[in-house]
Amino acid sequence: MAEKTLNDLFYETLRDIYYAERKILKSLPKMARAAQSEKLKNAFQKHRDETEGQVERLQQVFEIIGKNARAKTCPAIDGIVEEAEEIMEDFKGTPALDAGLLAAAQAVEHYEISRYGTLATWARELGLKDVVKLLEQTLAEESKTDETLTKIAETAVNQAAQKKAA
Figure 1 (cartoon, rainbow, N blue to C red):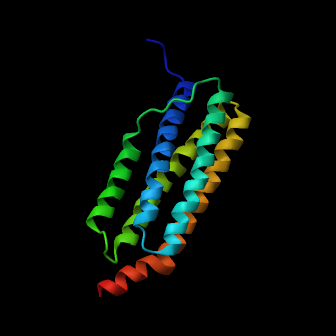
Figure 2 (figure 1 turned 30 degrees about the horizontal axis):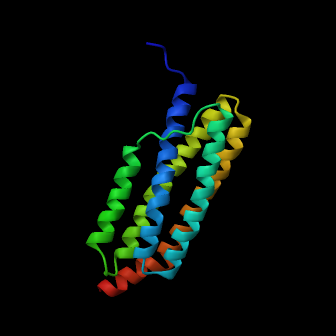
């Protein structure tokens, strides 16, 4: 068996995040429809549009490294999306729904931030300067989305859930 390298690990992780982004693309419209807060709906819709661009950037990365854009099942994102679906079902019509959706969305963002940060670091190590730029662009978007979600949670969603529950 051939020894695995950082290059191999980079490629496998790239396939993982490619799967995750495509899964997220399918989930965001459902989450937007379920959200009760207009701010949260808008944030989900905006991020869906961004995610389309992120998928395109990942396809560019595959092209740069000379590999086919092939996804590899990501059990982590499958689990996070499954939790979001459970929240949508279990909390439908309740004041806590948006807080749960927001928490699930932030779990997704944190996973993506972790993956993109790691991939950018490895790309730098592998001398893939063009790839680093693409990955860092997506990392910046993911971080901004996380900040936006935090602001929505702190200024509206969490208080609304708490006030109605009291």
